[in-house]
Length: 122
Image (cartoon, rainbow, N blue to C red; front, side, top):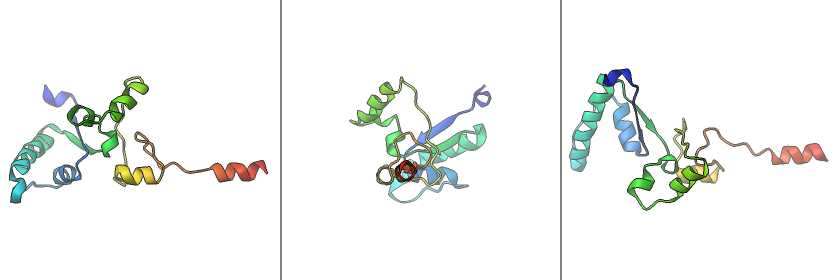
């Protein structure tokens, strides 16, 4: 029954994403316990076809449940309780996204066309 429903794990940890994207997860160093848990996730990923996706921290709705982050919940309520998985091939951090003018749930790079519009009006 589990394999009939597609599943997806969303993380804002590049470490978790990178380890699950690799073929094998090794246990070593101070994060041995985390690596053991990731081995279980990797097994489920291979056995059940679970997809692991990375999102930047402002697109991670779970932050509002585990940290004192109210912005995501406020955004979620303002968009009528609809959330989306942000596909960002460049894996830009929240800080970098803000620098280039991307909104938290925006997938594509926003192009500033204001100067083009001003030139057409003159």
